[in-house]
Length: 242
Ligand SMILES: [Zn+2]
Ligand SMILES: [Zn+2]
Image (cartoon, rainbow, N blue to C red; front, side, top):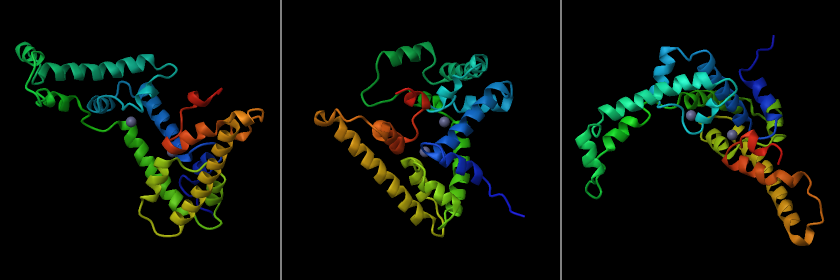
């Protein structure tokens, strides 16, 4: 009986798609968690407390709250956060009228009289979607490092893919491991970046006015793929229809 390796099938599927497989998988994880927050846990006291303590979602994940049918759930969760922020302003060290006036009247150069309030407004716990992403990224990294062997299906899928984006590739290389995976992944990623470099070269050549009669081929969107390769997968709405 063959035992199923955790996350292997998902990773093979993700590697068959364009772009960074980790970004795809983690975007899915993030989307499902935000769905659960908005559509299943909006009245769950523990979830609300966690969101309030995190001062809402981070800048990267906040936009996920804008989704079909999310207005009511988002209004409820965001009102919870806004109420916490108001309480902090009211109870903070610059909350009262006279102290606020003193603050507005100007403080000494180099002082930050509201630093305590700034600290209270800071997230007291990390963004819950970031936490979930980090947990799953660790699982995917472990699977990748274990399953990358000479001749393995995962290595073949990696070699045929767009590789990992730079941040995820760095994270994988920085993970302690034994075995051949790092060397094999570096060689595969080098070939992927080298192909991308050739495509950018071709894009730039055809952008030269002397060669403008030559139609663009597969290198047409290499500049967008290069952004995704360096910074992490671009959101689909930025690449659709260009
Ligand atoms: Zn990525
Ligand atoms: Zn986040």
